[in-house]
Structures are given as structure tokens and as C-alpha cells.
Amino acid sequence: MKLDPLSLRLFVAVMEENAIARAAAREHIAPSAASRRLAELEDVLRVELFVRSNRGTEPTAAAYALLHLARGVLNDLDGIGAQMRDFRAGVRGHLRVVANISAITQFLPGELQRFMAAHPQVQVQLQEQISTAVARSVAENAADVGILHHGSYGERVALLPWREDELVLIVPAGHALARRRSVRLAEALPWDFVGMHPGSAINHQLTRAAAELEAPLKLRMQVTSYDALCLMVSAGLGVAVLPRGSAQLLRGTLAIRTVTLAEPWARRRLSLCVRADESLSSVARLFVEHLRAPASEDGA
Image (cartoon, rainbow, N blue to C red; front, side, top):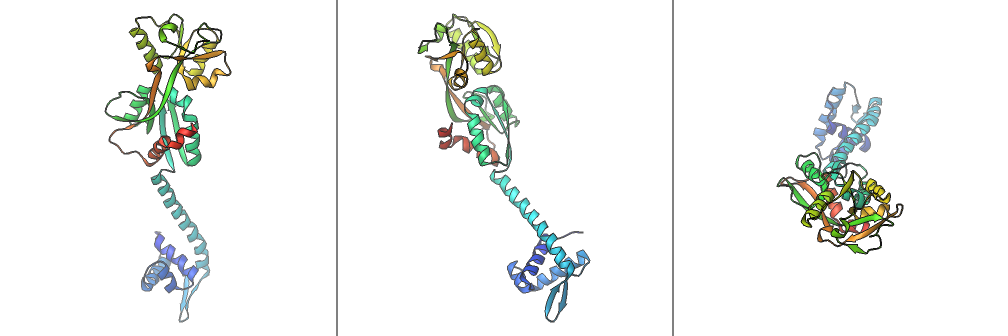
């Protein structure tokens, strides 16, 4: 049995208008075509819906039963159309985001909360990766939007400027450098360092900076998260470098101090990463626009 939604919609109009001519005008169809559609609907259903006489048409008991069913079907169809329009507009869908730990700990919690509150029907999947892996995930379409440190990652991705962060030195509360307002890296290198995992942007920067100073970087241990790094520093196992915003999250609960790094490379840029030469999906475009909106800066 194949039911035509247009015929069902016309049938509902006839029941509600109590006249074929008025229903045909409402549905922008000729009365003769409307009568033919109703007859075809009866043939498909193999039931009489209207009793026809010189005085017009009278609905049968079957017609009243069909009216309830048809309204439900048409509402469902309208709902499908509305949901598909939501997908097209980006207010419904699935979003894959990859970001480095600096973006996740400093900026993304608030941004994601506001985005998901405004678009509750968007499902967001977030995964932490180092910046090089972020670029690769976006290039290979394993992610829709990435957030990484600005740099050169090849022609398959495009970078959009987003935020800045600042690297600082963290030391145990009683450390010799704890009372300093700022230090150069050379002044910290005599001490043991607690480093992030191999491949991290911070470790790469520290290693390069120490090499330029022709001084060794004494990595006593390496960890995989900022909270573990701060815990090790608090225990007196070394000093470390991490973003100021991330350090502030734990400074009040741990015996650590932050000291400004007087180095030009301590100021870093974070960028949004998307696939080059490919249009964003509606939901990804909505997320990028949200992140880059001026209001996002105020709420971070």
C-alpha cells in the first residue's frame, strides 16, 4: 500500500473545511483534481471515506478514524523536514573536535559549555592530541575542527587565528626563584625540570631554547598532563614550564609559584585548524563562528 502524503494532507483539509472546494483552494489544487485524489485514496485504502449525495459529501466512520492517523503521519513528516532543516542550519548534528592540552585546559571548557547550551541538539566529541596530531586528524577527515599552536602543518589544512597564551615557569613554593617576578630561561636551567611527554610543543620549545643557549636541559621526569606536572613540582621534584592559564587552575591548591618567563617565545598563538579547500559542514561552521565571535573573548 502506497499512501501519498499530498492526498493525506488534502483529506485532512477536506475534513477540517467540511467542503472539497474550500479544501482544494487551501491546498492550491483544482476541485476536480481534489475529488480525483480523494477517490484514489479510497481505492488505495479499499474503504469508503465519504458518502456522496446531491447535498455534498458526508464523512464516514472510517474517515474520522483516518483523520486521527493522517494528522499523526503528517506531523511526523513535518518533523522530519524540520530536523533536516536543523541539520542544514547546523543546530543539529555531530561535531568532532581535536585540540591540544593548552586549549583544553585554558579556553575550551567555557566555550564548549556556551556552544552546547545554545545548541543542545549538537553532539560534540572532543579528543586531546598534540598539535601535529591535531593537524593530521583534520587533514585526514578524522576531525572537523582542530585547535593547535600556530605553525606550519602542510597545505592540506588552513589555520584561522584564535587566541594567545603565555608560558610561565612554575617552581615549588620555597624555591630560590619563587620570589622573582620574572626570569630568563638560562637562570632556570641549572635546576632539574619536570617535562611534558615527548612530542609535546612545550618540550620541543624548551629543548630548542636550551640548545640555542648551549646549555643542557635536565629533564628529571616526564608526565602526560598538566595536573601531574604541577603535583611533581609541588613535591619539590623540579621546576617546569606550562601555560599561565593552566597553572592558575592549580596554584591555589598546591604549593607552587608562577614566575614570568622573560623570553619572546613564551607568548604563543593558538589557531583553529580546518581542512583546506573544503567547505565546513553546517555544524562545524557554526562552531568556528562561535569560537571567533567577539562575545567568546569576553566569556573566556
